[in-house]
Image (cartoon, rainbow, N blue to C red; front, side, top):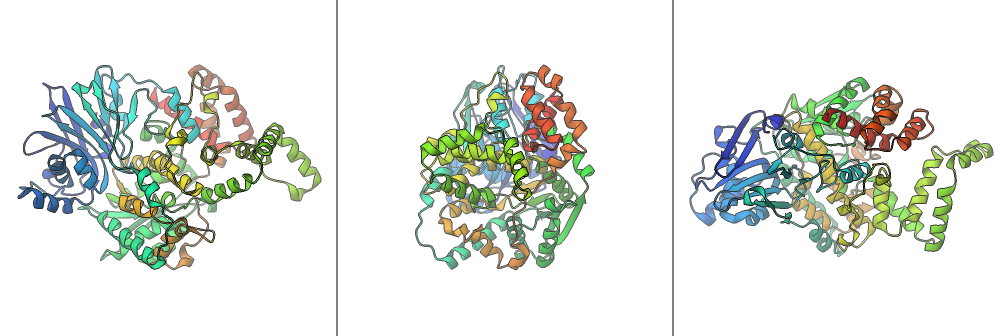
Length: 622
């Protein structure tokens, strides 16, 4: 099982087992802090009671050592690894006491031989993955699904309910995985396994994002300069802690606000040029490398960029099913893997700017959705429902044809798409369901997935959302508990660890998350400008003219590739006979979309990519 994930730790491996009890822990090590054998895992406590297998980094482990010494007297440390610190913290403070003190990204398994229980825990924001579940009479767990698949007891089958969720979101949301009975430990939770794996507790929450979101948004007066100084100081400390390493480190740099502020803080604390990396594409609409180069030049980093041709980018596609282990349809997985591969040629650790959009109101869809929702609410409910139904029944191609006859100036690209979207927007009764509809790929996925019923995900449990002051706060919260851990962070972890590169995300330091939730909205969105406060910090290091520009997604031109160089590959995976024989999808609407897309009638690339990534995963699985 550990050999299957050797890419996550090529430097060392270890197995600990107790055959009398029937428990075994395996580990693959990527040596970052304390490269000596003193950091070998699984690690047994000096008293022999506890055994730990741990993935990640505890950034405040030096301070924890001081706290442990002050509270418990002299410690005879064997080395200076954060694994040893974590094990001591768990031993002396217990699981809850230790978890509340940790600042880091982690997934760990702790065996308590005295209580005969296994603890599986995951970091607050979900940076590190952890899967678990029962197979036959065995209880299995691991950092990636591929480690579970090679166990003799494995008997996993596709969870059709999870498949519907995947078709809606483009990823399988926690706590499910694509396999029936195999779950993900939710962020900021731990699970207790006892009775030789027969008894598995419900996940226990040790830090509540909902509580901080609800308590933090006060709307009270905040001094602007004080908040800029406060964020600057927190960022500096968070970035500085994540520069802890006994190996070369660097940063991903796109030239956008988030990655630029991380690199600026790194360079301000470094006595030599920081290593930065970016990937470029020759298509202007998808190329951020030129912006990254300008920022890198201003900050004086040791910058490396690589321009990738479509042919080179497409060589990654066959690897995607094995990298992610379950269907995953975010096309930015391709450049994320490529920039990770580039960075790994030079460093072992890379800092990333992920998280800024969710914390500081950075996505373009936030402002757009809020405006649309407010405008449509001006219409009486009965009128809105009537108009929605009427629009939904109009064949958009007929309206488009009529507009073309009236005047070329009135032509709208993909007018039918726009009509359908407006019909859906007008039909929603509350802002939460409206936002879910806005970010959903397939709107009714249980109609495309055969013999399925879409489960009620956390996203759909609207009553469980915290009491937030505005729809804008609600959108950010929803993304922080769904899209961020299950898409963004899963993408970064799998892409980086596939090439044995550790990616660290300073903007998701839990103190920064709590700080962001304590800010009124005008510090995040002001005068049409997103991430206002974060920008004020960045302007202290980089002139605003170098970074103030429209937001650009980190993606690839999938829409055009499917009509061109990927057409034959896609046509094979979308073959009607093949889909029908597999028995997961209704092939008719898929084939209709495929025809409309390749003929240029409609743009269905996102929905088709969902299907294609499942089909490619299914083909690899067999």
